[in-house]
Amino acid sequence: MYKIAAMGDKDSIYGFASLGISIFPVEDSADAGRLLRQLAESEYGVIYITEALASDLNAEIQHYASKPLPAIIPVPGIRGNTGIGLENVSKFVEKAVGSDIIS
Amino acid sequence: MAVMNVNPTRMELTNLKRKLVTARRGHKLLKDKRDELMRRFLDMVRENKALRKEVEEGIKQANVAMSVARCVMSDKALDVALMLPTQEMQLEVSEKNVMSVMIPEFDVKFRTANENDIYSYGFANTSGDLDTAVKALSDIMPKMIRLAEIEKSCQLMADEIEKTRRRVNALEHVMIPQYEETIKYITMKLDENERSTTTRLMKVKDMMLAQAHNYD
Image 1 (cartoon, helix red, strand yellow):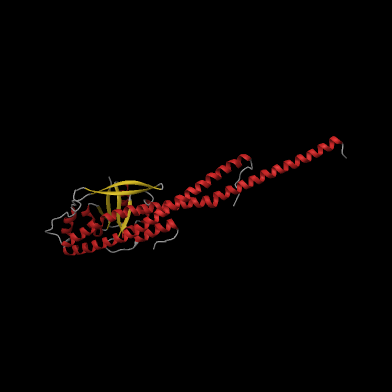
Image 2 (tube, helix red, strand yellow):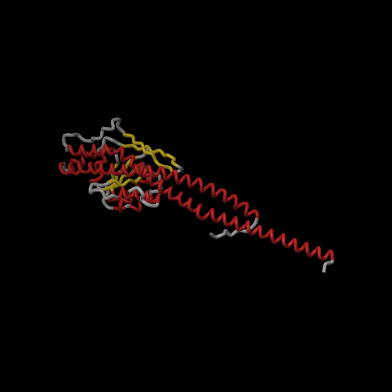
């Protein structure tokens, strides 16, 4: 049995708590990296992470890219959408096909 | 393309011919794998993109309501309201094998029987906007789970497609031509040896005949 986590600035992820997702508010990215590793090694199958934080933690996130679990999914935070999510999807296509044919 | 560094012998030739057959078959299989993976990947990535747009829109709506709620309520009241969730999500993960790529499948279980039991607070002291925010998030949740599943799958499949493509290309443009050329080289060399043996024999025969019949 796995659990779902949400990471990011407190304001963005607070709402998720009511749905039964464990929330982990973080402020600076050094702590966040450590926390992400901790979560990934324990029983969390899906980790939602705010886009702002995701761009800081790119290296750590890439580390888990080739493993089946956990799925680390960037979601827009309260400060708006930075477009990282869709950019990632384009990157997958680019990697697989050679150029982004779905844009 | 360079000829491999092998001895031009009959044994080497048989080995290489066998290797060439294997390489050709491997190439065909890998090519089929790549094509099928690509087909599935493209379907998935389209869904991924559509889902992501929906989810991002949904979260935006929830965030708008949340911001309003934060303005109307004190921080402390908001903390208290959300501090103890009634709901707990359990994620059941199974793996599906798609062309030897293990992709995860997520199935969500809720702790309480009623999935709509998401409000962890009394309605007396909270703003209605908080309800809206929580409801909006809860509505988008199934899609978020599906997004997690499909985005991870896309990521894994993109990796696998890249790997398979490299293998196909290596076989098609390096291994197979190399084998073919080496086989050609060995065949030529063996034929040449055979011809030189024949001529030598003819020469020796001539010399022996000349000796036997005392030709001058």
